[in-house]
Length: 208
Length: 208
Image (cartoon, rainbow over all chains, first blue to last red; front, side, top):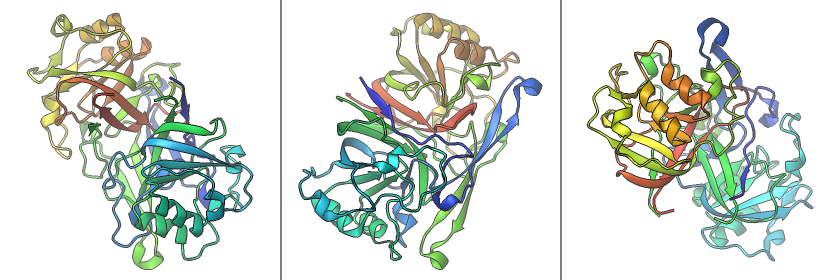
């Protein structure tokens, strides 16, 4: 069984959205003194690989512990968008077969970046027309390989369209090593009560 | 496909090991002012459902990002230890068939506790004899339904035996709703570079 770990490793020097870094890993017991190691971890709800809960952008939206453990678990298609500059738009999806209830992950040139590069505000994103096309097709979760799924949309149309439609948003995937194809995705966010999102670990299983 | 979420929900009032609570969820952007919600999360490396990396108790042991994404993924057996007071010992395992490379999860009366009870220092744990029996049987990961896998062992024998043998330790599982039987476990810790452990989300899939 071939498995791809598509998670962004968490460390204080990792890329942060708009370079607003909050990640801190503090060792509170060290081995030399205590014969045990323990740490306190600080991170944002939208650090690295993570899931946006509806409450991130919807007034009365569900929090991350309310969306269900399987929100980003199931059959998934990795779609080739390596040629795209700027926005993934609806017209780019017309020739792609989208299964209802499928999870769609877009592999773009974002995945070529290193894990600790400064934030690139010109990342490839999903515009509102593509978000609407995914909803119309019945896609139940969509993933992107950067720390945001949209940019330059002051009304946050991509987020709000997807989250209001109950389509789960996964951000911060690392798809560089993943061949285009179909997989079983297991993306599991921490179950943080009441939170607007949570960091996750994500694996793609081949042939499952 | 029936799935059990066996994760301990994360919240500042959750049970903490020896009542040393560090969990904090701070909303840094609220919806009323910003039309978006964002939070900063603080938690210990051994909060709630989590995996102990070997470096937790072994001088030159691997950190949580080094043990491999599949350390706690695979066929798993939930074993009935609901009758046990105190320690699970080797003699309790003699009549249980343990498959090499299997993951073993012990369901004990720990699972009857609520998620926010004060820490109970009399929790059911795994003693060194049982740890040695699991290693001898070739078990590759072992899980317990409380925030520690051992107590009253000043030399930390259970941790050190298991971690030195490369047997992954999962602590803080919630097995109350899970029938005794065999499953596919997907327990995914955050990939925190260099850390001695990490919080995880854990699902049990039935019939997979």
